[in-house]
Every structure is written in C-alpha cells, then in structure tokens.
Length: 485
Image 1 (tube, rainbow, N blue to C red):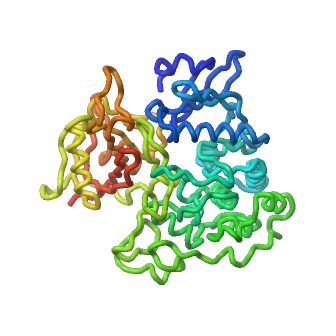
Image 2 (image 1 turned 90 degrees about the vertical axis):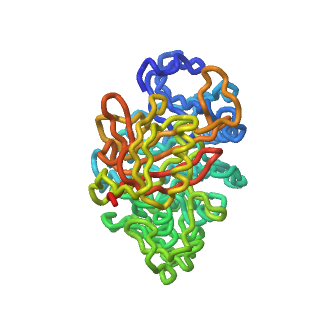
Image 3 (image 1 turned 180 degrees about the vertical axis):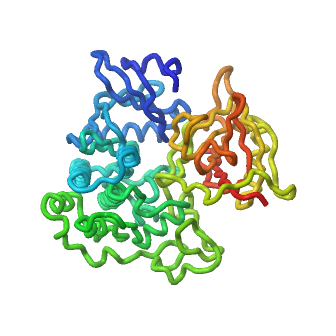
C-alpha cells in the first residue's frame, strides 16, 4: 500500500505504513499523539457492520486486557464504536518467527530453547487469564532480540465459552489445529499446546510439522500423529511428540512444558498414549488400514479411497480453519505455504479442454466465470483471461502483489452480482453482493498463472479447478497449474 493510500487518521492515531492484511482487517504502523509507535488493527469496512465480527473484536480486547506478560503484545487502546472499529497494541518491532526462519534458517541450541520456553510462558499467561489463543503459529510469534512475543488474539476465546456457530468461522490453521478441534470440539488449553508443538517443530526444522499439500492431507497426518520431527534436536523430541499427541488428554499442560524446558527436556517422561492415532472422520482408523485405493488426498500422503474424501475445511462435522470475509481476502490457503507444481506446465492445451477467454470483471462477466469454475470443479481447464483494471490481485498472505518479484501464490476477488443496489461510489462487499475469490497456486507471476504485461494482469494457462467452499456469500476456488492436454 502506497503512502498516499493510507488513512489520514484512525481515531487519534496517524498511520505511517501498512503492516499486514488478514481475515478481520488491516494492521497499520501508526504514531500516537505523543509520537510513539503503535500497531493499529482496523476491522475491514466490508464486515464492520456484522455483529459477529464486532463481537470477535470485542472478545479480543477483553482477552488482551486480562493478560499481563512481556511475552504477549499488550493492549494500548480500543474504540469499538468507531466506524470501522479498531484496537491499538504495542508495536513489536521485529520479524515473525516464520520470516525469521525463512531468512536465517532453523533455530538450534539456546536459540531454540529460548523460543520454546518463551512461547510456553506466553501460553501460561493466556491460560491463567482463563483464555485460549486458538491460532498460535509461526506467523503469530514475533522474534525480538531472539525472544518470542505472541501476537494476534483475533480468535481467542474464554476456556469455557461455546464455540461460535457462524458458518465457516475461523478456528485456526490446519497443521496447527489438533484433531479434536477439527471435529468441532471447543478449543481448550490442549489445543494451544498442540499448536506450540507444531510451532516449535517449525522453528527447529524450517518445515511444517505435518507437511504441505491439501488441507485433507495435512489434517489426516495430524489425526495419525504423523509429525515430521526429522532435524529436531533429540532432547526436544519427547516433549514435542507429547505436545503433538492426537489425543488431547495426554498432552502436557503449558506449565509442564515450562518446567521441562527449565530443566532437562530430554528427561521428560512422555505418556505412551501420545503416539496412538485417533480415528479420522470418513477414513476409518487413522493408522492406515482403511486408507487405500487409487484416489490421492494430496502430495506426500497415502491415497484415500474414492468416494470417501471429506472436505475438512467446510464439512458439517469437521470444521477447518478459514478466515472470515474481507473485501479482498476470504480464505487463506491453509498451511504455511502451498506446494508449487512439480513440473513446469505448458500454457498450451488441446482444443477439447474446457476454456475461458473473457475479461474477468464484476457483473455479468464475473457471473460467467463463476459458472464456468463451478461447472469444472475437479477438471482441467484452459484460461486466457485479462483482469479488468478494477480487479486487484494480492499475494497469498494478503499483501500487495509484487508484479516483478516473487509471491507464493496470487489471489483476486470479483463480484458477479449484488442482492441490493449499491450507492454511488460504494464498493461491493459481502454485505450486499455475491463474490468469488480465485487463488492461483504456485510461485507467481509465472508463465502458467498470473502474468503482468503492458500494465495489465491476465490469467493464462492450464489449471486444475478446486472449490474450497462458500463463506458469507463468497465462493472460493483454487487454480492449480497443470500440464497441457
């Protein structure tokens, strides 16, 4: 976001730069009236009118007011009656754990010990205040002078609270969410401990503990307890194995983690039940005998019997993590990174393959593309379609798309039709319109994917179409680059 695009003021705070865009809104680096730097999180205008979104923000404020720990970014201010509402927190100057590991490599020795202990200490403070974070992961841990600070309480809730039943509500990130939460149980402290284990495993190896690929594949590995701990120092393995146990009742508490890390982690006595898998819904036993046949659940995992796949992200009994609607970003592709295509696909396809070659735009043109994608889910298609100037692409993490750099994926949103008439100058949002989000997997821009030429974007190449789900009137599809027919 360019400086001239920043809001002039948010309350009494003056934005200086755009830090991030997420499921609930945008985060800015700002100055308070005394000139001190703070982080201002503003609810997205497109969802600010929704009562459940304001409730989530209110709950985040209540959580942060109760927690007092140097390991947690504390609340500075909040205005829940503003339009749109916002909260202000201490600005934690540093890199996320994810960015730190990507830039510097995995942690080891004392650095890994400090990270593991510090995050466990943050969880103790959160749990002692009667709350659960519910979305602990490497991108929600800041690294400051080698020490961790936990951020983002956007989906935290009280330990005894009933889970929000809003369809498609966010519950975390697959790969960091334990089996009991995937099955619809209320997240308790053991869910944060599971996320701690996955986060520390990532810090130690630079890889997601349950691998990459489709949401089903990653979630299935969590049910099986199939964490990849290769490269984790031996003294940490018993503790991480226990934290990543598929069964919540055998995971240690956060305070137990602290005690073990303060002494000799290698001496931790793990419950033998920690390595027992739990049954995965629709797959029979998670140990593997019911997982056979020619169907493929995702890269690097066992094949799944045809007809027995279950969409863990949007299914009725298994709810996986989808971030709630923003105007430009509906569904984060879950896991830290999507796996790029295994080969270099060709942009040329046989004429018999379904094809779409119109401009991608709001209105009727968008409706035709929506119908085309819906009719070809699970199929391979050819797309050669420029984006209208009003359609803005983003990188996979919601940041601005770098036309000449590297983005782990590309996504854009368009609005085929509106249920209510928009006012002059009003931008379409999920409050009044039906939207479609398209995510193009693999590193972008690419010859097969999203290209930028002569000042314009276009989608071109052969893709396999998948549908992630529908949330608050937004239909989310993915396009995976594939070989020509």
